[in-house]
Amino acid sequence: MSQPLDGIRILDFTHVQSGPTCTQLLAWMGADVIKVERPGVGDATRKQLVDVEGADSLYFTMLNHNKRSLTLNSKTQAGKEVLERLVKNCDVLVENFAPGALDRMGFGWTRIQELNPRMIMASVKGFGPGPYEDCKVYENVAQCAGGSASTTGFHDGLPMVTGAQIGDSGTGLHLGFGILAALLHREKTGRGQRVLAAMQDGVINLCRVKLRDQQRLKAGPLREYSQHGENVPFGEATPRAGNDSGGGQPGRILKCKGWEADPDAYTYFITQAAVWKNICDVIDKPDWKEDPNYATPDARLPRLNEVFGTIEDWTMTKTKYEVMQICNPLNIPVGPILSMKELAEEPSLRATGTIVECDHPERGPYLSVGCPVKLSDNAVTVTRSPLLGEHTDEVLSKVLGYSDEDIASFKEVGAV
Ligand code: COA
Image (cartoon, rainbow, N blue to C red):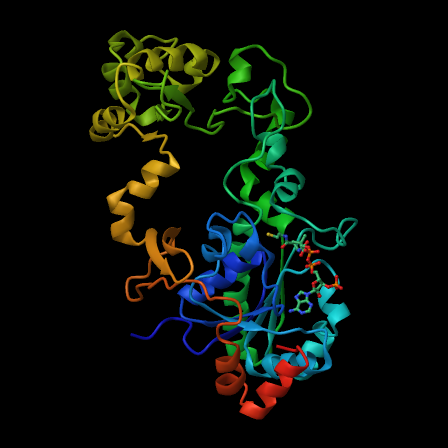
């Protein structure tokens, strides 16, 4: 069956996490992704966090499915020649080098346009134009510089980073969106363009509701934050809100049966206004349905600690799964805190391809996250990540048209 991006060829100059997540998504949608790596070295993540001696790491394998690997030293003369031919034969160049690296290599945007005016050049950088544009950035730096760390954690504790890789994988997603838009636009104009996704911008985008709250502060305390009920004054910036939803439907993480021994025996519980009466029945507080101190969302806001404390007295008598089984039929939104172990073992996630098992010649079977977006006509088959340089000869001959003699000479001078 044809795939949405069949016929699109990607020159994948990405490494580590942010860029590779983007090109992996494009590969899952059918693009031919040729990952260009330094001969003998490859993407640094291949040999980071190694758990099986001699094998590519999970870090690498889980970010580079469905790609081909071409080794190329783009700083040699012959390597530059091969790279030029690649630029002429690809639709999109994706890169996440440190600022200026491509220019230093001799492949800045002006040169790319000369070689292939249809080329889309897509970059992840830490920061957009401005005072920090020359800085190198990793995940947690982006979380800190994008407003996430300042608004995560408890108001009386340190700023906190989150386990979701919003700076890397989040920016990869943003970049993928930009590439698809540029490809569609090229259909109309025949021209490529530059696409930039800065990690700081991506994190700010994902923290949009916190900028909303920053502006709401002018109108007084944020009454949806539990610190309001605790009489802790607000400062000048959006504070850390702990596990408060902080939005229109207050929610918290509450203990469930077994919490003393199990670090994940918790549920998220949302006191959605529309089902307040059902909540009162479940927690055996029927009088709260009409009591003016509890009956309306506004009345409950200064009492969130008491309200959630009472709900927790009930959730502690149930497992997190029982809470879900009881609340779901009553339309009360709750969610168990699921550990990575539980997710890895969850049959329904295996059935949908969100968690997949792959086989790898060096490491054997391993689990990965499959494509998180499902298209009704285009199922994704996840194939293992390539070994370093596994497709060098294939790409040089079949895609770029080099002869066996050419390839031998490139190898002799260490260009591939
Ligand atoms: N052949 C020859 N040289 C190559 C090459 C190849 N195939 N691939 C990379 N290189 C060179 C680059 O040209 C660069 O050389 P230069 O410094 O002389 O210009 C060098 O390798 C190092 O590349 P760089 O991107 O600077 O890697 P780094 O390890 O120093 O920095 C990051 C890593 C992630 C901090 C940096 O790339 C970065 O800030 N990227 C943008 C933001 C980003 O994506 N961060 C998240 C990563 S998950």
